[in-house]
Length: 155
Ligand SMILES: CC(C)(COP(=O)(O)OP(=O)(O)OC[C@H]1O[C@@H](n2cnc3c(N)ncnc32)[C@H](O)[C@@H]1OP(=O)(O)O)[C@@H](O)C(=O)NCCC(=O)NCCS
Image (cartoon, rainbow, N blue to C red; front, top):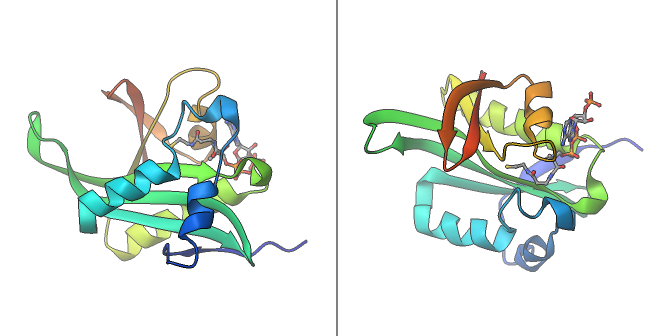
């Protein structure tokens, strides 16, 4: 089957399906549920970039980018970064290349906006998503954010 995934905003027609999206139960500690991300997107306004990942009529995932946000107000208010805040690929759609597509699609969006680096954080440990991000070219910065490993990809 030829896959042609695309990103789309969440709409009244798709919000219920978005909220029903689930990763595998053992992965739930690694990523917030879509309901939390959409609440944060409402609160953060323009600096949050939530998108559904669709393939035909099939909802296969959700991503949320962050755009030009102050990374650590206390450490350096001038340090503004962009990147991938959330990535949830539906349990029944994992291993089909949609995670890679999501990262590449957000990278393209950030490039269009003139961003030179894409940041992401992940839970440390064997069952986290560090291997996934390293496989896509992210390198660790040596920082931690809320206990999570910080990775960066040059765009
Ligand atoms: C991690 C996650 C996003 C991967 O999505 P996916 O659609 O299954 O990944 P893809 O099919 O695009 O895989 C791309 C490559 O990464 C590899 N990969 C996928 N998950 C991996 C993992 N956990 N560790 C190491 N490599 C991984 C794949 O084998 C594939 O490698 P290949 O191109 O050499 O064959 C998905 O498993 C997920 O949503 N997990 C739960 C939530 C989470 O952890 N999100 C990230 C935290 S923000």
